[in-house]
Image 1 (tube, rainbow, N blue to C red):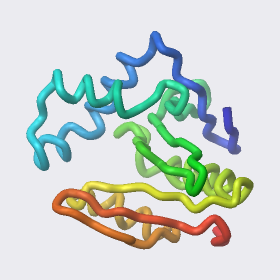
Image 2: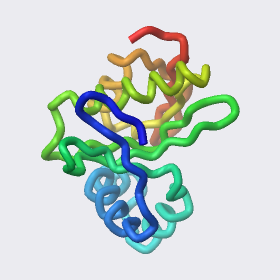
Image 3: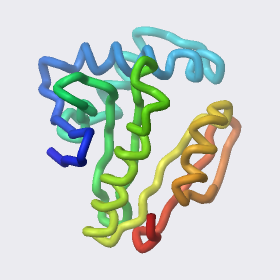
Length: 153
């Protein structure tokens, strides 16, 4: 568990994976449906195959779940697989708090942070740019972004 003044990351338990998938679906349905079409069976399987339970966290503020996070520390980077702030908790600075914690972890481990975002998620891309990320690549549906571990907040 990692802590900040307002948000904490709490490891997701295996018996909470269906709740985590419901949060994933609520947060990403529109982008996935627009890009690829949403197939519930496929997305359920993809979620379970792509996100290891040991890498999944609830983002919690005042004992209330406000988001879902998945990241993994690789040999050459901290990769942010998923960062969702629930709709009712958005625009309260929580995303910035989450990123500050991840930036601290990247600095401690001296690894850059890498992530991807749907191209149509302009708000997320602006958010990452404000936090020092630069686009390093793109394809038909995604942009790849990176931030150096030694960048100051």
